[in-house]
Image (tube, rainbow, N blue to C red; front, side):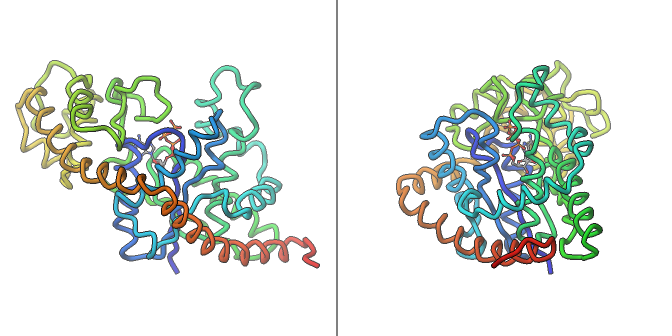
Length: 332
Ligand code: AQP
């Protein structure tokens, strides 16, 4: 049986990378598979949070999921902290994950920076909590952007280590699903850096809540080189900013990069950017409008999260009890 699990952190606003790299693919997957979509609010605690802002961001990410097309009745949509099993399984798995495996995680190295000793333990243990999120539901597939590939490999390693230790096949080994043209959307200011919520520059990303004027301004200011668009994709190889804009266009238009390059071959970037603005606004504006409508009724968002949380908790409780039985924890 295929069961999909994926999530996003409610740390600031979602951006085009989150949308094209993950969320938009979820919308497709919900038509064919059983899906569990989570707002991973416990993960968000790995950075300092203002409680009121965090509460709002949890509702905003929920609204973004629904506005992008996730059906909260058909799928399970909930916030992670509603289901205590995530933290509990995370502890159990952390006792099966050698520190050496965690030391290899590049995201921790990047986020902790030079002052590694001052980074919090949660940031270090983040991939184990992520493994618990997935394995708590015995999910088989996890649609993510390319940046999460290493964490997914760790989740597979931990599941395998658990299965071997207890001579069981209890946990499926979850498969990453890295889908679409835009698996790694880059910063609009630096084509070698991933578009990220935590980038200091607002001009590095397009947020899902940006209005048409802001989107236009950010795309117009996006870094490019002086050359016009080439006529083959191979010629984009050493032009990361140009490559990124072509990739974004292709993903938004539902085309391949080859098709985009053929359509705009020889065009100046000023003209291409104008076409990209129109396309981005046309695709994002309806989502932004729907998000605003949804956020006007916070009680309804909370109700949907609670309903989804209760459905998630039922699956989680059964699986966690099975794990406790396997490892010898008494359930008197
Ligand atoms: N630039 C990106 N291109 C493609 N996919 C991306 N994702 C994130 N950035 C890009 C995918 O979005 C999903 C949710 O990510 P997250 O909320 O867990 O945050 P993150 O991966 O840590 O990325 P952010 O948004 O850049 O946040 P910060 O700045 O806090 O690190 C994941 O599937 C991810 O792959």
